[in-house]
Image (cartoon, rainbow, N blue to C red):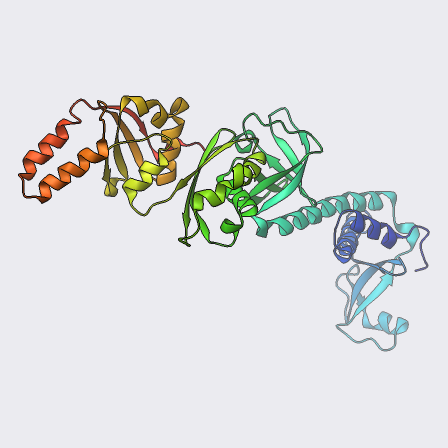
Length: 394
């Protein structure tokens, strides 16, 4: 067939480059769609093949017929006698191709081909997006805010595709503006009938973990380890850290000179407050640290039930609970223990009382008497707040 007036190959090449689609896959989709359309609308009983030369743009539509001794289906077969008149070298079982005149490409066939091609092009684009991001789940990317909808969802441009930030994955109170660039945590990439859905998050605690590694060299190189994070996005987070080098203060390393390092982290999160506390292998000490800035008293732990009862004096009670129960909720999530706060009468020196009770027992005094005396210090205690690890909203 002669060179067409319209070069399909050039047109497809431009589309492939503009939409980041593999050129040969698009040409193959075009060939298949045109063959299906021509078969359906022009010659439904025949086997049709379409070939598009990617270099010259030459387009061929061919009717394919099998060479047989006796014809049973004239649309699909040709007799050996007739085939030999056209080509003396043919044999039974071979296939012959018969070009279709360009004039026979009806408008209906080409329109149907266009529709089918559009559908296949969309499928190809969706596969490109899915394949590009399916292995990037769990990564933090920089994206551009593009638009929002009436459901409160925001959409961000990643490059090859868009990701959705539903309300639950946004930082409450944060104002996003189209054109702004923000860091997002790529939470999930899944296929749907309407194409791939990319779920992004600004509220996930793993975004905070990434930012800590970016801004704090000791965290990035593993000298300081982030053991646990609990977060209420846009408001407050707690980060438990531990140093593998006795000469490095993990809390000081995270906060930085005059707070410059932790401020760089909070600046990416809409000035969310981030408390850095010391992780401890001792459960009681870890819970005590997690409830800071409150200073708490006796901590009774039931490891098998993942529960802890913490005694707090009245002057420290509001700090331990936090605004709206936030401090105790975050501490529970951070430690993985359900924390029950119990108010008690003020004690001038709780640590001294504990140490004295232990000393009395070691000196051989009646342990029951010592324990009774110590328990009497807390006889007025009562439960005032309880938080479980599940209380922190994701």
